[in-house]
Length: 293
Image 1 (cartoon, one colour):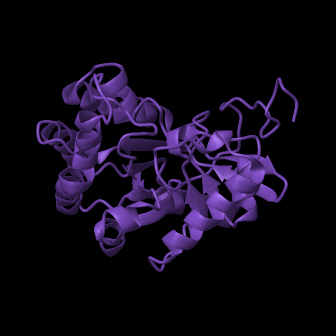
Image 2: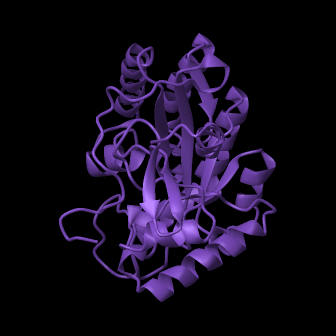
Image 3: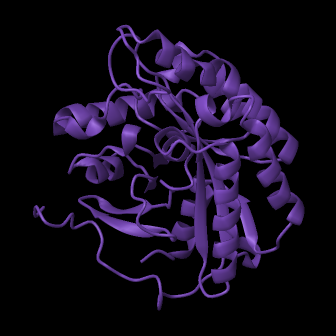
């Protein structure tokens, strides 16, 4: 690869592309990508609610762990109430460190997608052989849920120059790391095409609430505004919105009501243009009909 361009996809503006529909003539595909993550105690990467003064960082570690112990189950209740199937973005280490959590995602019918081993490290700095081993190991471990993952989200959206090639080599259908479009696009790899399914870095509770210091009501308003704008455009082109959530953030008791309100509004509106779906079903539809450029 050249140093000035990734060589994975060519520039192509969203205007002038071939038109197509989602299933049943729908025009806006919306999915919830829920990040189930684990972190190391006393070392490694991890978001911070507030700066810690000492190591080990008990405050931030425990805040993140709350999501797996409490927040996830609170979100399950909400999703069950609204009849929403989600894309569960699972660190493989969740299987060992949070027994029953990944199985709960599977049992409620969520899509199982891979999210690396843990979020204590970023895979982009790994040598090719080590990264290849990581991807193969994560895939094998998640397949123990009796559903082999077809989608990948890198921890910390971190990729090496080899990542798309290694994902395609390991049989992955799509990746969520590239937030460059509102439609699925095709990435070039050494092993054929790999779909990039849109995953928002804007409609994402981690940067919105933790980095930008906003709160749940503002985040809910961002979802409303984004959906309204995409609906105003979708008669001209099919679109995708991935809403990214983390149980240790939006699963907090004071934030769930705002999320519940906006999702309830959207569900009760029953807009015939919206397809509530998963990232995997988006990729499968695109592949089945050879829709992505």
